[in-house]
Length: 315
Image (cartoon, rainbow, N blue to C red; front, side, top):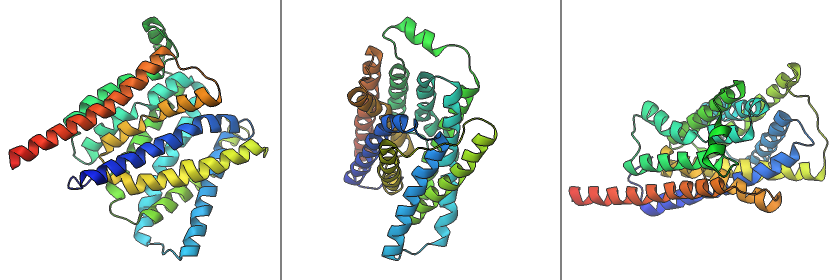
């Protein structure tokens, strides 16, 4: 991230990433209902395939040039994005949704660690405190209970295969976030976007047959009106638009802050589930949501404080 960017640019970037989480949050309900009519990896194939096709159509109309230098980095990012979807899909077959949500949320801790290793950048002091608050929030939000004893009993002590795959999912998503910070500022974001979408489409199609071959999931599809809506929403809004926003605006904030903003996704998912599926939010869920929100506010306030302090010291 360019630290010399004006605050207005950074706030615009943070707002764009927050909009992404709102759009992603709705997919929890939409995908859950859509999967009654289609196998999971085939849904991912159609989701990214349609998004790729729409973007290719736009390219043809605009006579967009495919800058060769951006294709390989886009494929590189697409592999991490696919691996995140792939491992999350397998993990959900063998672990509970509660544990899956908690483990996937660990990316908020993985991102700053990977950023430190790969980019040699330490998270800001404000972000370090925010990470702790957000991680605690995810712990509470992923619990369906209302007491400490329930929280501890739900976490359990057995780490199974599904938990391992879900942890791998968080790792791949974290790598995707960090490498977007490195790559997006150097290459044409439209070509990066198309290369990612096309890569996930091809690899998801291969994975569909892989799942079928190993009897993990049978290939099936029944085109109901809800499935068509689900494919359209996730393709256009939750894939094409969100990844375009991510490529264009994530470079204006640090990967660590981006990870904190992305942790709002389960909050929006719970809100959508409450209104559309009548699912209740537990007391711990409300506490977790408040902690995640507090984590973002603390990060913003402390980062602004330390920026002013450094400006005074250097001025």
